[in-house]
Image (tube, rainbow, N blue to C red; front, side, top):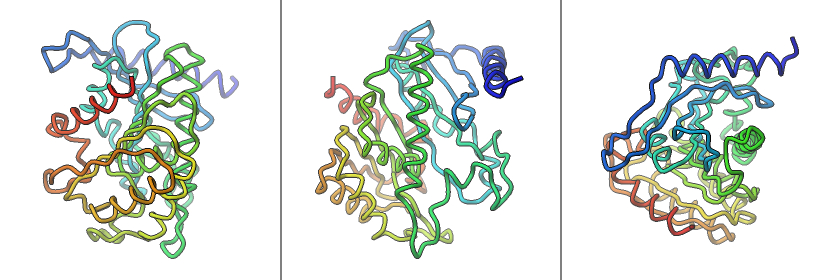
Length: 297
């Protein structure tokens, strides 16, 4: 059997399995009558990967929202990576009518087939090199390429309307979203960043970035060509990318020509970096996101 035919068959099997195991979800917000369906897909991309999908019931097509997760440089942590890092956030977008795809990077969770330091896919997504000279730029663009593959695949399948795509990212996934903005793909109408960056908490130490000046420099580089409307949300008690660093990044990005609205929200829990993953955070960020998206219509 040809590899692509095998992958397509796997996609069907996984979708059928998900439809049996995961029942349609009713919106927790009783003011919304929209019903949504949660599924697990195997995406036959150039680098095949699993994805959590949540979408409105029906055939569509629907507007697309891609949600990029963060990364771990620890191969053991990658193998235990959850299938869904921000389920409540994904469901919030689906209830607004989006076909939400949250890809699980190859080398993570159920697809953790890589051997430490000899991973087949892991380095493609995770490695930035040594702190003395990190390559933040290419690490972001690598995942940005995956987003483009997802858009092309779902458009070809006629699952989505191939315009006004919203890309959402957290941490390294948000950094990839910033990188994507520098390419100005015509299908992408908005990008939303939660606690974006790379190189945070070196050695597990809070507020100890790998190379903050290099990160700011790379952010400015992306800003020189980025023209996609963006919303950046950071948290005061984020110990990966704290307020001082995130403000430097935003200033560098916008001074270079990028379009980004910046918000710093009050401390959240014990560690603000994982803000988007908490259902309790939805009432905090959703008004900002709603207003941002509504103003683009």
